[in-house]
Image (cartoon, rainbow, N blue to C red; front, side):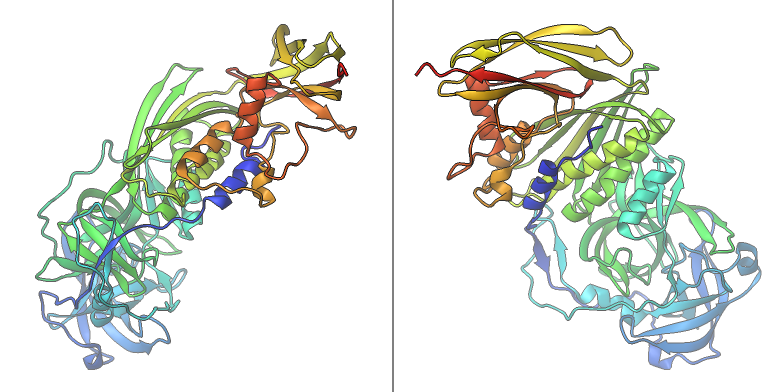
Length: 582
């Protein structure tokens, strides 16, 4: 069987990988929490206080905690505070839970910091608090936002790079809804995070609170995707400044530095006890701001500001049942994250909509559009897998999304990806069964009549008539070849060997259009080399790109391409002799 991504396509991904995102920046300034603060140098073992968080709905409650020790660190955070929580609530929920990251810890009404870390398979009453001074420092970094957000003053300062101390376990796993568990795992694995999959909780997107008012202890979330699906992490808000800036989580989300992610208000359904680690079952209910910093000490950003997004839509049709569904969601505008999130999201949606895993045939059209992009660009293909069709499609989507999101020529903003997918569990395969060439001796300019026998899977064989033209100047032994698209496809030798390069977006699109698809029947006349392989020409001083070679050969008649609605399998060849009149 043909594989989903051939060598030519992999090479294009490498060639177009580099991407420069133009951005504007604003110099950071210290966060001033709207409440008294207890400095870390005044914290002593034995001090008692309270932790504020949400364990049900949106109501902030508190439970007691005691300082056990101040733990020095070699990286960031530089110090952590070891606490022991207690009380009936802690006993009921099983201790500190994932999703409590960012829950503020107060002593005598003064903010000390927030819970950031715990341990799996341990005493879950114990946890580590990141000091508020450390958390507030994340907002000292310059903010970087995509250029179609409101303009900001130019960047003025640069801070030293930070390292993260791996102490305990971060308390915010990735939570998804609306996609299958294995789609969630694929996203989690690509981001090196544990992933939890929930049933779909919302459709059509999240409402926006333009003037949201949040307080320490409120349940919040960091979103990577939202709409008919959600991908993100639930945590807790630690502090809000008078200027609307906030800090939360008390540990990194993805640790990607300056970012532009939505901050959501979250609803906590329940705290789920677990021997490994209890966790909050929470879902986003509205978008309230923008996360601009994702650092070792926590996340931070601004309430009332909102990031741009990438739109993804999926139109699904099941040929077997007649079902037709449309799904739509948005993703963060981060070119390097788009290709990590989209494949799992698409595979997870397909699993959910199809209601099954396994063999089948997929016909799909992939369309990309956006600002600064020369119109809409579409590609069509067909895949069959005898094991896992959705996984095959996910690999193809990752390749396509990577090419456009990471192209080195221009930034496409706003950016949108649209998929039209039609599925059937039947093997819609068309086999090339026989090739007949009546004229084995021909002259330049002659038409060569060709008969090809094609058989659909377990169907009646059918004979189709085609023809090729012998180009002028051709002589000697040649091969008539009929094959399925993608089988023995010409490689971009001029790129691999360093003779040519892709130098514009228009050229990139032209090469993508020239790529064969699995539903094509390719008929061609090749020079015979006596090795069982045919080549169309000798190596020239400046070898052609595949698009140039394909255009020339179709014009002269030595290459014909026909499209079907099947996954085409097979390759056959016959030798003919071209007699030169001289």
